[in-house]
Length: 119
Length: 104
Length: 334
Image 1 (cartoon, each protein chain N blue to C red):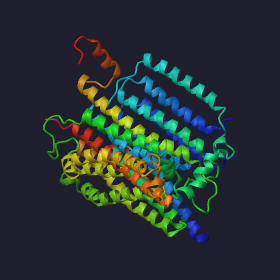
Image 2: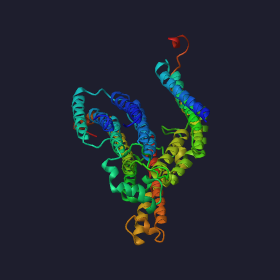
Image 3: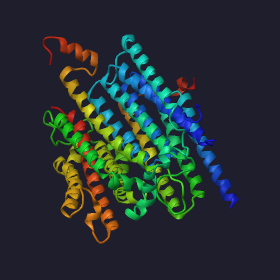
Image 4: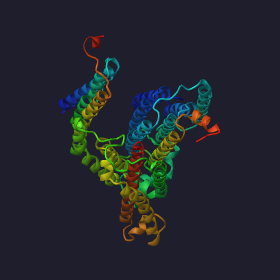
């Protein structure tokens, strides 16, 4: 049971760790790191779905007959680039929040927000 | 061609042993500068030996020239990276552990 | 059954799990950022083992390159240590994460076995179309490029739009320089390195042409091997980032001016959409490259893929360099 689907277990384990980092830490940069771990666990899940035993990369060559499936590769290529776009935008927001509130901690920033003289 | 194959596997094993040595040094050595040296062994010597071993097993000239180029660029960049790391630490004020204290 | 590959998979997964747990545990954010770079590079190795060479290329360039640089840039502008996480946050998060994971693992028991050639996805007729028929229809050996640029070209247009949007948004957030650092060399945190860093300056000067040439090689060779617009754009940006780190933001802004980059950023997207409109005007559907050369559709496909990948490469390179300039220039205040 585990041996036939061990790639799913690997992806899910990393997904659990990524989700935990994202939810438990209050520091915003750490949250973005957790999001990136989570994203990569999802990528691993998709790529492993396309693999064929004894296959090779989907670059056509006359001497090879078995190829891994190219469609997950295309989807994940897009997803990686979108992931970095999200991360970059998130980091820019963190820098601006730090400039406005003086902290990158979510709880401290929310506490400052509740005060009457919020930035 | 078994001599070539044996030589290739000997080089690959040597490269792997050096990489492992680098990792071991990262744990056991006492000081930042000695640890940087250990880590740079993995990058430069370990990787170069591995690439030389793979070069002996390369199927075609195209693959071989690519491996040579990778080794060339690796030999340029890994020592430079270790140098940059050590120089940044020195500039920051981290003093190397010398003399009696290093022999703990 | 699965062979010895399982050993490699388990070893790489052990490194990934250790790196992820390290990111969770450490309170020093610099260590966490470097561990994330290690995580990305090991993920790229795992992708190679699973035959996804294009994806591994992109992940190594993007994750271990640009992403680490952006994280370190942010940490230089903000705090680099985090406070201790209280148990009131830890315990519910742990319960939710483990609960979600258990549910997903239970669901994954119904998924097909790993790497089995009899999987439903491998038997689907679309696989046949992509792997066999694409040779007659498009004639590009790298099937991932063929699918990315031609069969699913509309998705890729959307993706280039996402990169463009992220570039514009970061420019709006961080683009306005505070203080008087617009163009003065050496005042930015990535200030130029002086005389005692001769080794770094010489090696950087030696490597720069090779990095940029390699980016162009990857761009145009994406039809025949792993590569394409995204990887090329990111590698080009990484070369410029190296130049900036060694010679200073002022010199880099003089060489690769932000004005030109701001013009190149939409130019790639316009090129991509322009190819689509051109095919419309020539009588085909949107992004139907066969219309570009009616006598020889395969040539039309090649031309279409070339133009489209060029558009992708231009926008991605401009966006990544502008992102880095935005983060690096933010710290230069009066």
